Image (cartoon, rainbow, N blue to C red):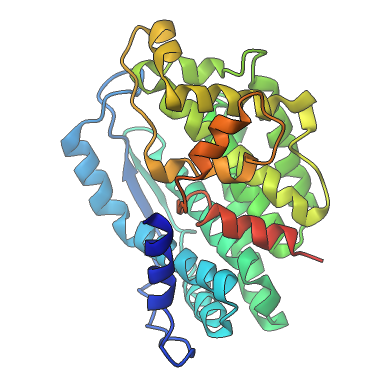
Length: 331
């Protein structure tokens, strides 16, 4: 059923005659990012409904743009319809011209505006990467500096030693890696590789992440969430003819094995934390598609997760199967 729905969605973007549907005008560029933390406990495991509603009101214009750009980029990869790529580029160009996401970062409780900035960049840079074959020199001249400025801003956040180098660092890594892949920037690629290697060093022999184990009832959720950007980074590395799945003595695979077991049976996480575990939402399982052919101990279980797709997650860069297609089709 999910495969049928995905097909119908892609078909809805294309007219019956095979020509692309008209590209709607993009929404106004959002320069400033205002966001608030929405957890009510110190462990970051309990969501306050009122704070979460406030958070969504503030960021919905950004997340809506983010999602719609990736849907168009994925439609281009899936169908080859150049008009879908051009629409993606036009939307990105409009926000680049407006200096979107480069204004003030307004944090109300925590660092949530910084988090939105890097999550959004990860998706927008991935969209640019997916339509890269259709970018003209003029497109690059407009989009590349805009994406790179956002990547540099994401990296500056980590100059403050008070920030925990947990899953948020890994998402910054994906944002920087996607920007590097879209703009062919070797320096940013090196920065992304360093973040990836640091993340691998955080993975224990049993596949756990110490800081994510501290998230009480969301420990499993955050192990899964930390795996998402790392898997996407490893896949992007194929576009530069590098094998990141094997880096760090296969530590990424240990994390994937632990998360796979936990998603199918969270009993171990419950025992270790003493808390009932929140299971990851289906849209957060797209990493399984990227790792399905890796030599995991429990690969049959992981492949069962992958079979639940197709998946779509804007922070991770859209449909991971189409990310793989884009990364592995690069010259």
